[in-house]
Amino acid sequence: QGQENIVTVSILPNLELPSGTRITLSGLTGTQTPVSQAGERAPLRDGFGDSFALTLVSWGGASGLLVIEASASLNSPAKPGVSFRLALTNGAVERAAAPVTVAVSLPSGANGACGVPRCDVLGLQQYVTITTG
Image (cartoon, rainbow, N blue to C red; front, side):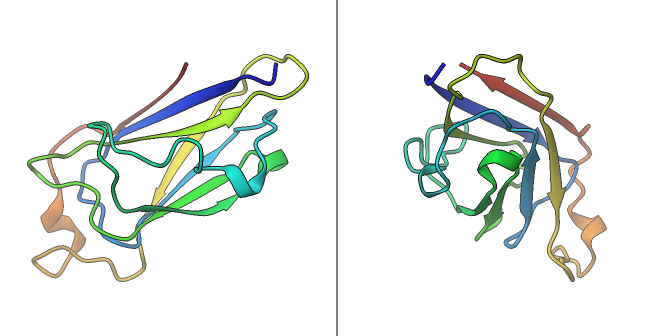
């Protein structure tokens, strides 16, 4: 109750994620993280500890909806996975964890180097993992 959790999200998409890609997490309910502090106490970082081009677009707080956007390409064939962390504070009342879902939206008109999205397929299985601790 009231303790901070670091939430880690890891995505292994099957295509490159260009600038303008939005990642939406829903189900982050029951926190007491103010809208103004989401992403501040644990700045968005990639899985290697480096800061990178993710910006908080919106944090719904009570609705549990968090949207971030890439201001640069997030992955490549050499580094296909995307992982980031953020801090959320538990609510004042203890409750069971709610299921969290992740959705990735490419910007309209997003094309790869060959002019179509398909050329950037990385040939990997898509999976999402979310851990807290």
